[in-house]
Length: 386
Image 1 (cartoon, helix red, strand yellow):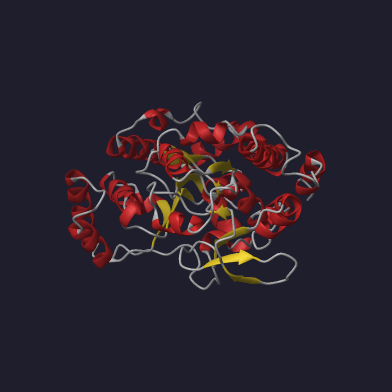
Image 2 (image 1 turned 90 degrees about the horizontal axis):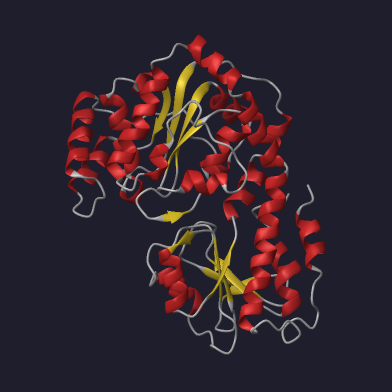
């Protein structure tokens, strides 16, 4: 499968170079400080110039149509060339950005490719770790747009179930206090009260279950330690990157329970559970009330999710093991789909949406821009190879 490290280079070689489209993106991955551009026929990247016309902004969400990082990506580009925004979200904010800045929308599921790369070895791990906790909840960033994670942890403490799960919470008491005092916080007054009561009871909320000694991104690090940790909990509380903003955007986090054959609840923006299902995955509405995915009110949505976690915690480990056995058809489907048809779906989507962008730019004519028109099916077959 395509590696994250070479993802842009592979797309360039197979789709962009044949039609003479330069490309640029932010480096290192996940940052918005340094733009780099690929120079034709030179095996090196260099600081960008005004000739680049395709911009990869697919690792992080777009928070506003005039996002400075987004504007910088297209600064200096002449309108006679296509201006293509490669992205990984479906949102009104993105639509407005494309309209405001005259951008063609090249959408694909970037984090699906990343997850298949990072978690590829899980298909070879056959040992099943016993369930010792009723849920797990991984929380790295817990302030700003991720402060909902702080609120969720406090709700689980309020419901008296926090110690029945494996929880990582990489924020300390001062982080919590600073967020409560932040005038721009997303937290409601009621949530502030719940969090204040939590840190009053627990003066040191910081918790570790994931490893601290990994190099690079915690989400990208996968090995036997992570696999066993994920399997030792029954329910995965997937704390996604997007919760407060209205967009369809999922990351590698949602695929962690899928590769280790565990059920999950999705703590994300409304509609994202249905978004996951649109890619062929099944969820757990036979056992879990998933109507939270339809709820627009953020605080109420968290209440509904935390109630489902409490419901799971009311069961014994023997009962949860029986429920896990009952879920096997869904669990096995999701894992098999992740390593199988899902790859084909997101590859088709990536190639077809790129083709659509260039056809839109040329009013449906392909001969004007593709003198060396690539065989799209051959590109799809190549990208689908293991």
